[in-house]
Image (cartoon, rainbow, N blue to C red):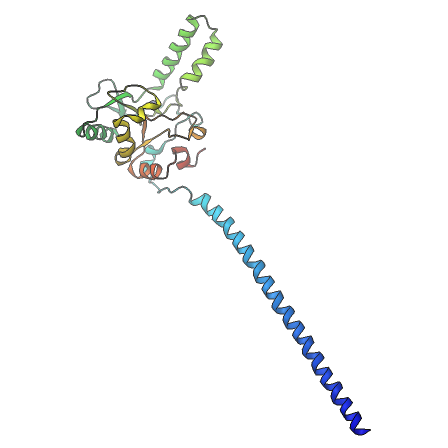
Length: 259
Ligand SMILES: [Zn+2]
């Protein structure tokens, strides 16, 4: 009997040990499972977090822009229909070399003349179509156009509305700033998209940044600039900004974060 009782006790003990072992094993398995789950959850969150972070970082870093000093801010003045120049805006100008009647900001005239001269040394003949225009000139241009339509029988209001779609209002044109110039090939003096097919325009688009100029109204940016693609319109912004803008394929509004 005593032996039987002893065997029973030993069995019970073994059973308890086994039970404990299985309970521990179960807890251990659950812990491992929990840890794996937790890590997986944390990792997926990190991933989605990092994607979001990249998104935010992207928005900040999207535009590469070197800080400029205050003495150079004149190069990056933004002019468009939302950023109009004051009516009394004035700028010191100098004549474009060899082209009578065309004036440009005297601080950037050297770069413009050099660009035209270097193109000429490669056999490319560039003509200036428009450079600096005073705000007063812009006003007179509008008055003349309105008068023309009124003379054709249009009402004053209709004539003004129509003119507004054709001529940029005074102060909202980059030509009023003194840093914009319209350049065309001598062999094709039309302000049309086909201007881009001339050797002169191809050279300008490829080399303008070396002289501090950008193609101000690029293809596909009309939604931001409000102006159609104008392969002939170049704007001086300084060499560093010009390279950053053109290399990134952006427009001035995007570069300045003003749109
Ligand atoms: Zn222009």
